Amino acid sequence: MNKIFKIFLYSSLLLSCLSFLSCGSSERFTSERDSSPHERESETPNDSKSEFSQFNNLKVLESETGEASYYGKKFNGRRTANGEKYNMYALTAAHVSYPFNTIIRVTNLENNKIVIVRINDRYPTSGKRIIDLSYEAAKTIGMIKSGTAEVRLDVLKWGEK
Image (tube, rainbow, N blue to C red):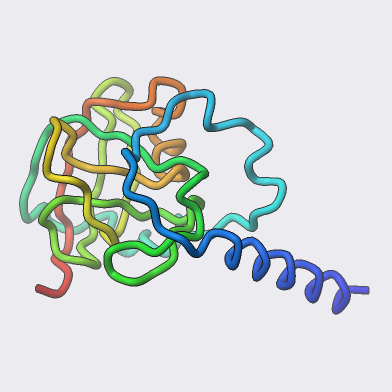
């Protein structure tokens, strides 16, 4: 029974990924209506929270303050700028200039909730936003309902240049 379930799960994930292969160039801001509580029914959440626990006590290398937004469900499975497939349940983000694989602590300045993310995508240079978070990262810091939040970015580890 366990093998059948795994086969079904992997088949479902593969079909989901194949259906999202095309990339779009539309704006990535997501509103509250894009984030229903049923979004996780066909996805397996990525347990990335423990992946970043090693960065909790590192010295801050650089800080930046500004507005954050997040990617919605329609981008799930599409290619990011570094070639990975976007996983809305991973703790990742897009930034205009930080190198890929840079590790950043994001603090929501409205509620002091914190999440640690890895940069794997680019965000358009136009506009006033400084980072575009994955759905899971945005949920972790409590900004799903508002769609945006004032945040502080603390670089904990630089990625490759």
